[in-house]
Image (cartoon, rainbow, N blue to C red; front, side, top):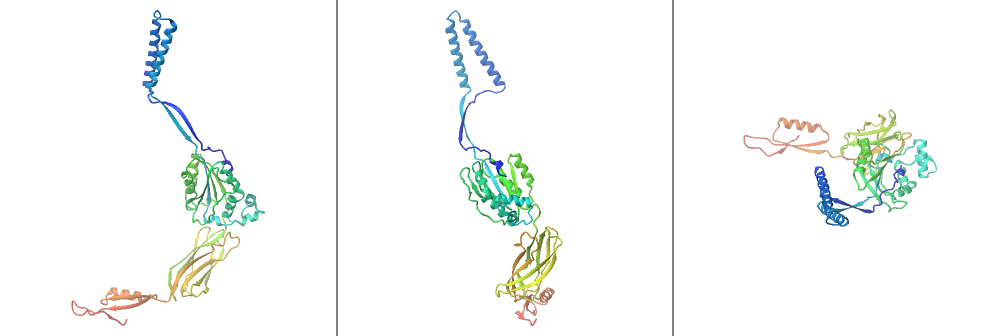
Length: 419
């Protein structure tokens, strides 16, 4: 897709253009009046010398007439205030921007990549068979294109343009710039990891159009096409068309959604008490497995004891594509101390990736109850309410200190009460 952009660009050499400007040149009605005055002066001068035929020879008379008209022309030119203006023109080298998707979806493999697409990638990367292309992640396909077979085309682009390599996810950022005419194949393309949490394709296009110096020869976008930031990529494409900037898109991956099951989050409190239930929830999301059954296993690993225990298993029916499924994993902690919990869903057939099938969380499980000291001047209504509320909560250990009033204006010191 980059070959149509290999058009000749300016050589960057400075050129000087000179021209004469007339600062006093009249315009509009003033110009018509000035032309009339000049015509009258010329006609009057000629008529004056025609009347002097008896005073001098014809040749001398017309030479004098021409000299006088020349002097009048020079005087008129001086009144017009001529000046020489010089324009310095420098053609900036054109820019070619490569926008490469680095969102997390680029780490997906496409085992069901269509045969024609797999064969095309195999030819582009010099692979032995299309099956090898299906085993590579989308990020690895792009890296191979930029650093292997496509490196020569990328180097050829630097002979015509300044090439800027920009990666984007939730935000766009330049990772390399190859000056025009200064790079040779293979180019040193820096590495990056596809870890972005979102894909803002519209924002990346806007950044490519607005940032940088020099005319923009074109933008090449390598992405799996999943814009999750909610921007208007079509509006950005229209602005590029209005600016005369061609956009070229190279789709990576399968046009079908990759089949995948992942544990998005494992949520619970940071602290728990031994012997009491710990509220915990796992959020599972899937694509391509709507309505199918999967098994979710919760395990606990003690940081101090080094022991790992299976806490519980849940059979879950996966929600429609893209929707989160909440799974209740409330349980009594089996271990004491710092505990690392992991919720893992079993791998299903045809999954594009299994690295995201688990999520973990650290919880501190303590045997100590929360100690509460309740101090009151007497058995008031508020005192009785708080005392009953705290006593009913097994997570608290209550200590009460109550004073007893005698007479007016005096109180006995606070003494321990048996309750």
